[in-house]
Length: 139
Image 1: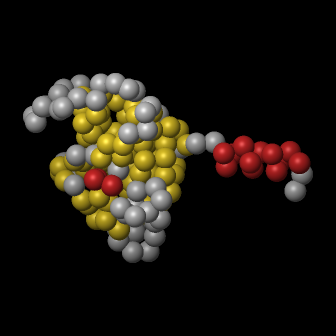
Image 2 (image 1 turned 45 degrees about the horizontal axis):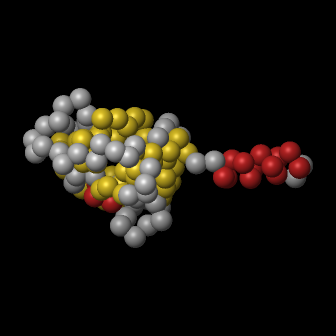
């Protein structure tokens, strides 16, 4: 391996994923397509402000996997984590907390988070299960 490709590998490994980059945790692959403040602050009223994270979830494994919205976290600049409250499964027009993703299936979810107005939201942490390591995406 040349020195140039070795350095390139280290830089790639050290770079945190950003919006649009695929990240894996267990058998699930996640692609965050957008994160932002919700246009409407609906019922119930948020304690802070609602953020919506649009994420494509793909089951890369050979067995069905449960995607549990409460395992997904937004992280602010102070490092505090906020669990998602619910998710809309876009194609199914269904609001839920858990959805089964079949092998090879891709679902598009819009997750709702209630976070304080400050400090700024900086990352999202995505999990296959409550005990998995998770994968972070810089926003």
